[in-house]
Image (cartoon, rainbow, N blue to C red):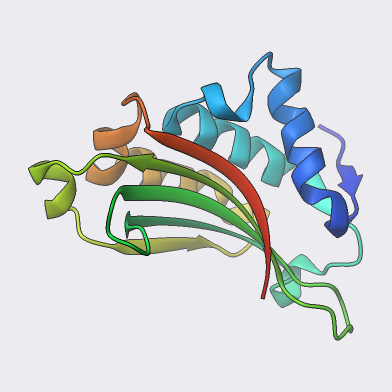
Length: 151
């Protein structure tokens, strides 16, 4: 499919439109759909003024306790770095929070990076085959959020 472009400042809007084009809202999706939407967005939409080969556009899967250890969270973060600029690094994160269970506690914390679109198929396969993903894929999250952070 042809690549679609978006401005880094409007990444959250662009991703939200993709979710909406599937007839869904951010608040209504579960982790399995979130992974599908995030990988579609990464595969088909490029950020302007970034260079993938230089680490300007990467995808991160992470899991573990939230900052207050109130929930077990999983998230997909698109990291965007503008070329040759002193602008902050932008993190666009889709996250899902779940109540604690003994199984979720046993999963610990961790992360997995996808450094470029050519690695996306293996990245998605590794996530879908993980114990973490199998535990949350269809579970109803207590919280779902899409946010942009500047680092």
